[in-house]
Length: 197
Image (cartoon, helix red, strand yellow):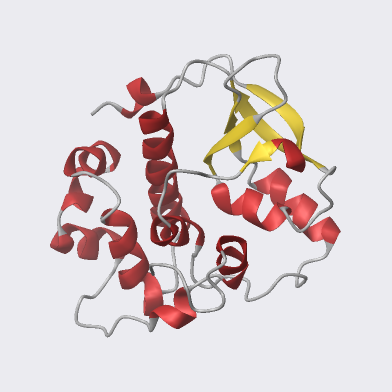
């Protein structure tokens, strides 16, 4: 698989998009969305960051959005889902910076990009080793061997991931309760103990 053929970033535009024009992710089970939005450590509740801090965060990590119809004010997230999740604490009419693509993209490509971009971000920025085994394994399970090979061939095997990322399979994985992001649990309705996690 050639990642550059999954989508071309030519013609991307940097815009400020209203939060209420960004649609929620659909078509993925709650456990998948949880794995894509729950890095460790994560904010444990809404309201921890100030509005100004959230705005700075959106500048540092702008989401990648897809605009299916060029003249419609409707956008779908295809990368940096966590930024949109946290930014939803701002008023709905707030605008956040985003890289917007408007070329053709089917649902499968969108889901693949969301999974691939999350995994690349995880290995790029890293995780706390006490919970990394569990988080990385959950994300790896969302990707095909072909997709993993396109990202980094060494990451296709458990021993390769251990060498490349410094993981240790003998270390007891963190309790999943502490690896969840309560903000994503709230947005998915999982905070009451429901869901398929």
